[in-house]
Each structure stands twice: as structure tokens, then as C-alpha cells.
Image (cartoon, rainbow, N blue to C red; front, side, top):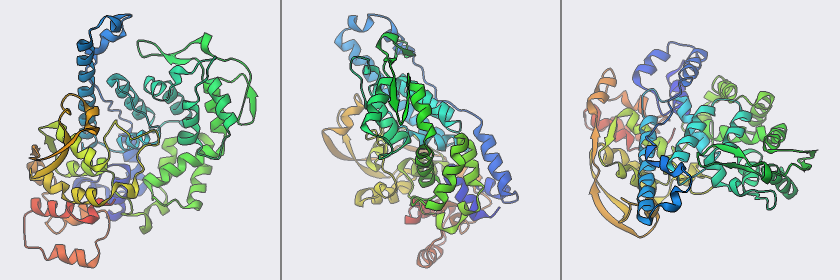
Length: 460
């Protein structure tokens, strides 16, 4: 397999390729390389944290008996643990073995968007996305709809027979499966009735409150029956618009931000047959057109992709984990904190006058423990929500432990000049290539930082 194709594939299904992988896989066929990626994706590395401090909240009447200070302290602990979860996941994304399943999990977080203030709900939702990331869309949607985090986020918990709440079913169709124009307001109203009674108990387990469920006849997307929530999802999946909606999301994320109608129809027809996500991704990665020059180096890396990519090349540990939150916030993407139910816009929205300078300086700032001006909050230590209020600026040095020794070991067989062939996903223009080649002779560490500071490194 050609090296340029390997780099392209591994930035799409993961967060870059190592020199060792590049040398090993160039001897293999495309089908074999893709098979290896999917074989590794069968491994499920769920996130895990100690939730025992919150077990007390599951007991009946405990919340009412707690003092205000005790409850506030528990909430603050929950926020800190969500930050721990954020750091943990970003480190996992940066691991050498992180590949397709983690990339798919990151993708789905911005499709089935959800946010919850309870750390255990956040944890379970993320692990649910990871579990179903390459599975069947039907099972995925039904699992997502039952998650306590989603039941809270879009008010399904408040959806009762006497007063149907339309929030979840509206977003299910508009933002998760069909898109605007493929359903009516009547479908929203009837669909909401089908999800009445869906809720969770104190143990954060999914339940259906039978007395609150409307078991009457409903007409949804042209079909009439005594539908429940699962039936609604099944009927949605009967619409080819659903397959097209998901395929367009996948195409724009994994292939090219500009969707090609011919290819999109091809993928829609394929995916609609079984709604098998793994088969769809295999189909894409094995297609000749996926490797066309027009698709290489055309995606702007998200802040998380940028951070994970840098850390994958040069392993780092943030000694002050909160600094990693500041960087995410300043670049516009904080894991577990989507801006709204529509998620992050992505692509060109990642770049503006402020973020471009930060992004281009990010590698040198991180890897050289340089000074950076943070726009942070006085109360951030205690309350992550305060991050969005009462801003102040101060300069501080990043506290990062950089494992240059592992970098040197991984890149020992590459010359300084060869680094750019691995680190840069796109072809450098003539002037930039000449500029890099004419730089004074330096060591690999400095050249690595120089390459990661190029505008072209922002692309994949």
C-alpha cells in the first residue's frame, strides 16, 4: 500500500500513523491493512472511574436530608471527576493502540449529542457510544434513547401521557436521524406520545412507567398503530432519508467536508440494506475513490484531533490537568461539554484569527513548556461551569512532562528530512517545502516542532 494512502487512511480512522506501522503496512494490500484496523477495533477499552462517592444519592430520601454544604461538596466532586474523565479520554485517544473505535466514538459524540451534569451518566453514555460505535444503527439508537443522560438531556423523563414532551423525538428526527424536511409537526406530536413513560429510576436504570405511557393509536410517518418508542425508531429506519442523513455525516467527517452526491447515493444504498456501521466503514476504506487526491489533506483537524495527534507523536503528561481544559476551551472544543444539542459545527468553524495563532503555536508551547496567556476563571478550581463566566487573563507556563526519549526511539530510523513525510498529511507547496529544506540543520526534536507549527499540520 502506498505511503501517502496509509497516512490518509490512518488520519481518517485514527489520529496518525507511526513510522513502524508505515514501514510494516506498506508491504501489505489495502484489504489486509483495513482488516487489521478493524481487528484492533474489536477491543473495547471502556473508560472507568470510581463512582462510589455518589452511591449515597441512590438511596431514597437521602438528598432531602443532606445539608446544602454537603450537597454542594458532592456536586463539586462530580465536576472534578468529569474533568478527570475528560483528561482520561484525551490520553486514551493519544495512545498508540487508539484507532478506529476511539475515532468512531469521538465522531458519534457529535452526532448523538448529549450532556449531563452527573458524572456517572456522562461515563455510561460515553461507554455506550464506544460499545455501539461499529454496530447496528437500530440497536445503537435504541440504546441511546434509553441512556439516563439522554433521558435527562432532552426531557424524556418529563414526557408523560397527560402532557407529552416533544423535545427528544424532535431532535431524534431533526438532528440524529432524518434532518429537517423529512417529517411533519404531526409526526413530532405523535412520536412524543410513543415515548411517554420512558424514564430512569434512582439507580439510573431505564424504566417505562406504564401509567404514564400513552398506549393509544398513533399515526407516525404515514404508519398507524399502537406504537411505542422502539416502534418509532423502527419506522424512522424504514425511511431511506435516515440512511442518507447518517451517510452524509460519515462522509463529511471521514472522507471530505464537501459531500459528493454520487458517492453519497452509493453509500446510502449500501447502508440502507442492513444499517451495519462496520460494513459501511469497511466499504468506504476499501473504495478506490476514498484515496483520490481530492480527499487528502482537506480536513481541518478538530482541537481534539490536533491535541491527540501531537501527543501521539510526542507522548506528554500535563502535570496540571486543568491546563488541558484551558487549551480545549480556548480552541473551541471541550470533551463532554458540547455547545448545544446540534454539537460543534466543525470544519472551517475551528479556525478564526485567535484560534489559528494558538493552534500553530500549540506544539512549541506544549513541547517546550512555554508561556501562554490563559483566559481563565477565578472559580475554575471549584466549578467548571464558572469557566464560562467572569473571565480574566494571565500568563503562565504550561507544566508538561514531555517524553522525548520515546519520540527518539519511535523515529530513530527517520532522518530529519524524512520527518515531514510522516507528520504532514498533505503535500507541501513548493515555497513551504523549500523553506523547510533550507532551515539550518537541526535535531529531530526541533524539526518535529517546526513541522507541527506549519499551517499544513492543521490539516489531515
